[in-house]
Image (tube, rainbow, N blue to C red):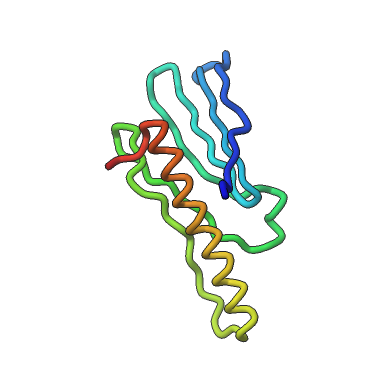
Length: 115
């Protein structure tokens, strides 16, 4: 089952940007901006709707050729947790991992994933 849906794919007439693509899931939003200069910016953010629940942030690392080298998942320490809290954290990390896998597939389809 796909987590992400393409919600915007359009040419724009903004100062520096000429094309925007946006993919959204229940937890994350991926944005791809193509600038007039040829530079491509890719970022992933947590959706506002889910900010009340902890979901790990995703960080996209690009090289100088606009290629995505890696999508990293935020980790943090909460000290000791009870077993239910640990289960919940594991579920959130599973969501993040599944999201990264699907985002890499989307970026590969857009020729933006370094191989």
